[in-house]
Image (cartoon, rainbow, N blue to C red; front, top):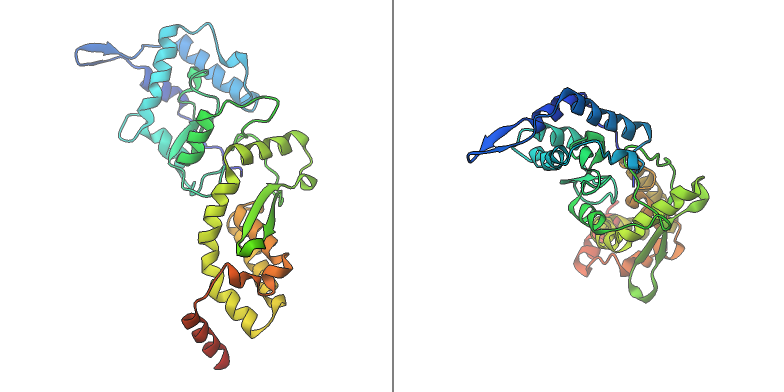
Length: 298
C-alpha cells in the first residue's frame, strides 16, 4: 500500500453540468436538467468529502436530492468509460500511475469508488472518490463488506502512509522451497489504527499468496548473478549485493514495497546467502559450467 498524488482537478462543476444534461436517445428523453442550486449542493458534498478526508458520513447521503437526480448521478459514471463524454476524468486519474497502489503488483486498469457508488451515488463522478486499481484489487474490494471492528481499506489519496519499512517478510527455506510470509511491522508504525488497517488490506487482498506467485518470477533474474557472486567470492558479497539491490528497488518504488522488503529479508537470511539460494534459484549444469569458465578467465 502506498500513497499516490491526489489528481489536480478543476472541472467538477463543468463535468456535473455535462453529465446531467438532458438528451434524446432512441426517441426517449434521458438525463436530468439540474438547477444551479442542485449543482451547488453536489459541489458542497464534494467539499464535505474533502474536509473530512473521505471518511464515511451520513452527510454524504443527502435526503434533499431528488431520486431522479441521484439516479442520474449514478448513471453518469458510465460516461467516464473510453470514448464517452467524461473519458477525460479517467485519463486524469490514470495519468502517471503505473502500478496498483494497493498491491504494488499489477497495472491499474479500473476505477474504484472508495465510498461505494451503491450508497454514495452523489459522488459517482467525483474525481477524489475514484482510485485507480488493478482488476484483482478492485474486484476483491468490491466484493468485501468490511467490519468496522476488524479494519478498513485505506484511501490512497487521503490516508497518510508512513515512508518507512513497515512491511516485514519472514523467509523459510525448509523442504527445499522458498516460502515468504509478509506482515506489518508494528514497531515502525506509530498509529494503532493504521497498523490494523494495513494488516486488514494485507489479509483481505490475499497479498501473501499473490506475492509468492510474483516472487517466483521476480527472483529468477537473480539466479546467475548470485551464483557468480557466491562462486567467485563468498556469502558476505551475496549479502552486499542484495543490500544494494534492495536500496535500488526502494528508490524505484517505495520503502515498504514488496520487492525491497523481500530482498532485505533474503539478505538477513544466513542460509540463503551461504548457498541456500541454489535449491530455489537453480542454474542448470551447462550454465553453471559457463559461469565457472567466466570466473576462471578473470
